[in-house]
Image (cartoon, rainbow, N blue to C red; front, side, top):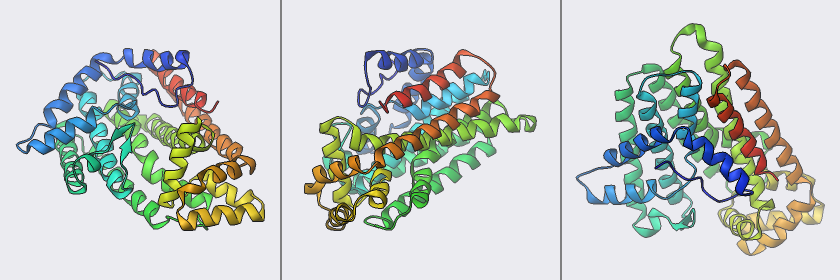
Length: 341
């Protein structure tokens, strides 16, 4: 079965159906991906398989492997390696989630207990390493040095992004430019790698360099928008999600764009309140922080930034020939915009 879209932040049933219809057009490929995932997490170490199944079956939209499938089919790819490539992308993403939860000391993800809480930090880190190594084994099977170069570079930059975020916890002077670089590395790079590697798989000829680069940019802009929308939803979403996510970020000292912009635009008294909440890593101040951010104009600026990224993502698709799969890529950008209601 293809994965059902996660219900978090889905505005209404029609929008949910919009996403479901996209998955239905690549359902057979997702069946193959699920089978490949199951076979590749098989291990002599029972705990590897247990944790691997737990995290890969935890739900989520699986947007990154979806982008691999849609990009390759939009470029008329007729082989079978796009399924392996999509699985590689999902393994890389899952490995980063396992490591992220350890670094952030998270206890919940998608409403479920995290692997590090259920088992241990050590087990989560090691299974994450296992998934990374499996991903690189599959890269060898794909047999493309250009794709291996894209994915290995992306993996390295994503790790740098994690370190950049860690080193800027509680940094009240973090600029919007620096924050954008962090989310480019930490979040957007894997979206970029998904569309770029799928394009290279489908169009390896040097004469196709323009469309390859434009689809690379599609993934990048889509990925940046994805994170900015999540940032926006932490303050503008439903009250249950808002308080929890904002409180978690404050307790960890994480700076996101609404908070950075609020520090620049709020009154002096409000800035002092925000600074104290960040310095003290106080989740108890979440309600007041949300109020200040909402009153500062930071949410509208964040919203406009996300919309601009989506506009740029859609603009790159002008180089792709018309097809149902190009339409699906465009629909994904529209779905992202609907999350900004």
